[in-house]
Amino acid sequence: MRIVTFYSHLNGLEFLKVHQRALWTEIRNVITSLNAKACRTKVSEEIRTSGKPLYSPIDMNTAMKRAFAKHGWSQRRTSYWVTSDAKLIRKTLHMPPDQQKSEIEAAGLEPIYSYNQTDFVKNRVAVEVQFGKYSFVAYDLFVKHLAFYVGDVIDVGVEILPMKELQAEMSSGVSYYEGSFTTSSARVAVYPLFRLSLSELHPSRATGAGWTTEGIIDHTRTAQRTKLQLRKTL
Image 1 (tube, rainbow, N blue to C red):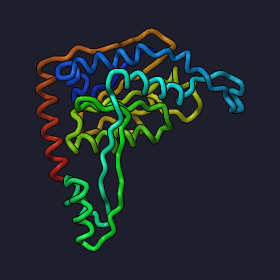
Image 2 (cartoon, rainbow, N blue to C red):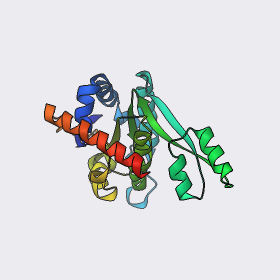
Image 3 (cartoon, one colour):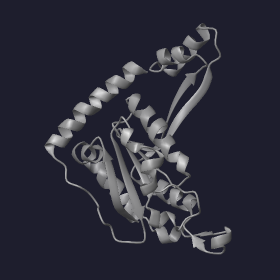
Image 4 (cartoon, helix red, strand yellow):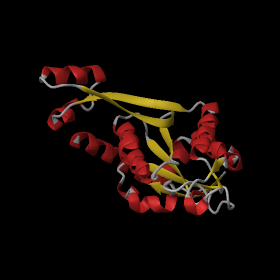
């Protein structure tokens, strides 16, 4: 598997290179170690491609999970309680789960248990591998990563997507890197984000970009401001 290109929002990649260089190396090693051809196990049942062997999103996700686990990455879940009163939710948002539940019950409302879970987390970096439907990308960006960032669990989120050329060899409906910019409006994300695109079909056209001291300083200042603004708003 190859890294083809990337999009670094609020200097997400630059943050990794400076503050989490070892994790950035691990992410690259996980991706390049995967044999995508071994995941070409799905036989198409669609009319226009009937009988054609395709890359299996399930098998690719399983291979990713095993590879990340070898480096100590694991799933992370954040649990919380919600209710029908939006104003009360803003008050309880940053409380521990038990306190959230007590506050909701004290207000005479019914507490509803919920949670967010992300694929891989290690040392305040979250990675989501997305070989699912288009809508799942937006959910990753604006629910999963954002919840972990606002909750001060992570400093940067990484979203891994297939390029169109790889997606074309998968079942229909799978999200892809080029299309995700218009479907999920990634440029308005308010936390450091780094998107990677993958392909098995062509050599890498871009495996990294240079970073500057000015970029890191700008990232740090902007990230601190946005996190404070988010907490005040919520």
